Length: 356
Image (cartoon, rainbow, N blue to C red; front, side, top):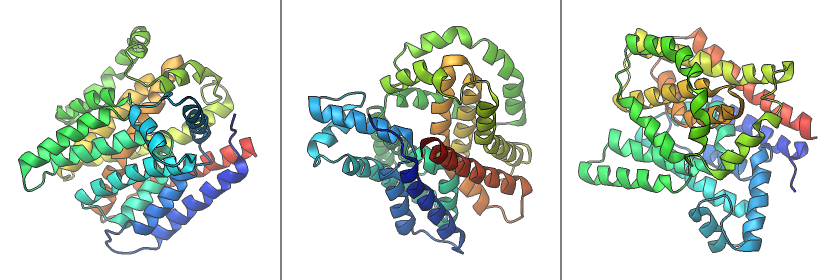
């Protein structure tokens, strides 16, 4: 059994700091992702600070031994059989393809790479390396962009987008439910919509518990996720003590601040936002809303964790776009970004301290 090594996790802390400082010193507009992409790929390949890296290595060894897929979709097992047998090579390919798809997506939204890479570092990087599901999510986001920002040949763009969405379903078992959630972006986002969602929140949350068991039995989440649900209460994050409460506040506070900012700006002040980005803003809000519905609901809290994981992918695009299109200083934006950095540093230091 492989164990998280705090000493090796220092490598990830160094790579994160390097990525952050490298982009903080870049000025002007850029569309170059090469150096930062290599740093992100190195972080993802050797994600020693993430416990799932060691969990996947155990699964990888078992698949090599038994020559059959275990807790993964067929594509990932095929890669193991196709590539030379090396766990880190397998990770580099899976997360490398995911990263390439994300970069292609970012380029389609014409985002400033300097801004986006900084936002990626503080919001998405640690979530990006958690599960193989990043490949399906990245393909799904790229496919969405083919609908919202079509190619010159629109029919070809829509066909490719549809095929991409279909293929993403086979790259992680949780993708079908996230695709269904995406349909909520068809709802107009007005002041009344936001206010109604807030009023209904406690009612929906109280009425949610009876249906949790039924949801878990639908198979919309992977076996790996189902196992996580049964053991979630053993994680000290879910324990109602001072340590668990502090960690949860540190992790969630920056998201609350960011969504307050985005909702006020885009919904109440009606700041202009391009339609493709608006779709992702609505998607991010719905995912965060669902995550909060399940937060702390005993074994169903794992759904909250998985939904926040998914939410970080489109949120990066929304935040990067907001920063790029906002000239005036915004204290709430700066405060939320600072708290994202604090949450990242805390996560690194906690892992290093706990596993040294």
